[in-house]
Length: 284
Ligand SMILES: NC(=O)c1ccc[n+]([C@@H]2O[C@H](COP(=O)([O-])OP(=O)(O)OC[C@H]3O[C@@H](n4cnc5c(N)ncnc54)[C@H](O)[C@@H]3O)[C@@H](O)[C@H]2O)c1
Image 1 (cartoon, rainbow, N blue to C red):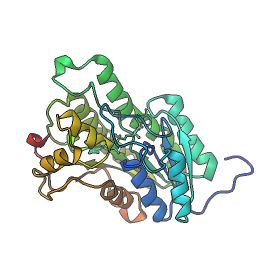
Image 2 (image 1 turned 135 degrees about the vertical axis):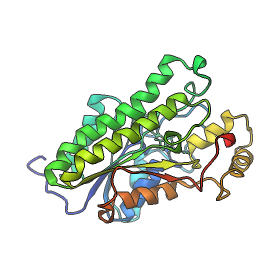
Image 3 (image 1 turned 180 degrees about the horizontal axis):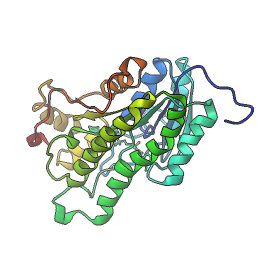
Image 4 (image 1 turned 90 degrees about the vertical axis):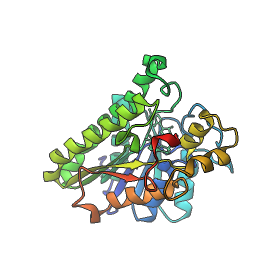
């Protein structure tokens, strides 16, 4: 912490992958700000990076992280933004150090960034090595690097919450997603091991495993599956979800907020599905 910095009394949360208006990251940042956290919102690019069939972008004046900070501040919260690549050692270090420099502490890390999907989807013989590597670099190495950078600070303070976005894809089989399923299973395995190591230090580590949530990612998946009308495609896929609809980013944010709270001190090493009761592989 710089000499002119005073330590905040409010808890501070750093969230990755916040650049898209309809994303889980932006919803989480707004929820944590409402719950009283100072939030540091981040992404590799200010307005996020596209999935291969992205369509619902930048409506209503959305300009990415700056707009998100403005909305949080307009609601009485405190926020700042940083850009950085979670998959690079320097990028991850920059994000964690930036949050600590800004507010003097870091209590919560939400590893939400996810690799854009596209070429990683398909039969394994059609998946280029570059697509496998991109998925592993962002989804797995990114969680490793961000957590590795944040944990020493949390241990020193004897308090911390690490919440990483896995997926139901890390818990069950989904077709034509070998790289994505492997990456999310890796996040769950990493989290379970971390939970052991961090428990004596007052730091918990958990995963949230969303089912199909109506974000750029799910919309892109629907278009990729051959639907031209997004709402029609989503409605058809939702018939297989027991709750009868896709999840909302705010519903994932609510579970993240609980795991990020002091109330969740006795929950660690878990992979919690938030999936409307399960989505069988046949629906993808
Ligand atoms: N939407 C769903 O149905 C669903 C289901 C299960 C899991 N998830 C997971 O939830 C998380 C959020 O996904 P989403 O649905 O909000 O949409 P998304 O996948 O479009 O958002 C991912 C965000 O990560 C950012 N990102 C990509 N590469 C990055 C990098 N190298 N460094 C930093 N940020 C980077 C993107 O710019 C984007 O803003 C992802 O980890 C995803 O795998 C989503």
